[in-house]
Image 1 (cartoon, each protein chain N blue to C red):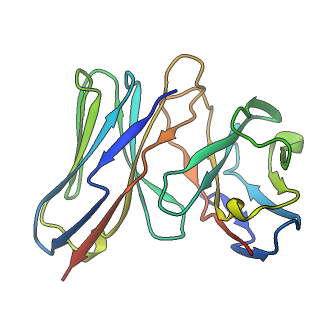
Image 2 (cartoon, chains in turn blue, yellow):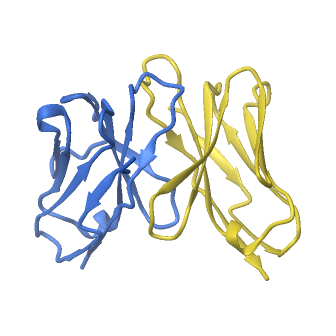
Length: 115
Length: 113
């Protein structure tokens, strides 16, 4: 089966610019997650969707980050304006039900460099 | 909030040697997941351990869950260069966590041929 697709693979921008990342989860997976992984750290959850509704966005910096999952399938994560500290790998993951006791499938990530 | 501490932070071994990576939780473990990551890439699922104490093996990798100690260990037997990478433990918080995982900081494994 096809895995979680993410694009772009790499992105380099200057601070204060805007950037958007796209994710297409595994077909039929109800739950979609966006994680931020700063170099040398473990992934940190930014937002979790169940179908097209937000389950948890408590760690999303809402003054600059936004995310949507229209129609409950693919998702877009946006940063506007970007800061130097946003340099990280942005990982998208999906799971079948999102109710627990099931593995998360991860995409290859988008590596963002903010100069 | 739950925190996971991994040890060691990095590990360098000679090919053929055994090694162990530990993951300790600040709270009760309801589900413990081990993933492997190549630098700059996504996470590859290795194993999932359920609450209640469990041990699983796949090829040369064995993971154990000690719920009393709130700890899990990942053991690699006769390491190979292909085992090199970043190993991450992730845990569910239970309750209304709805499947999301909190991750440790990762253990960087280098295997010299």
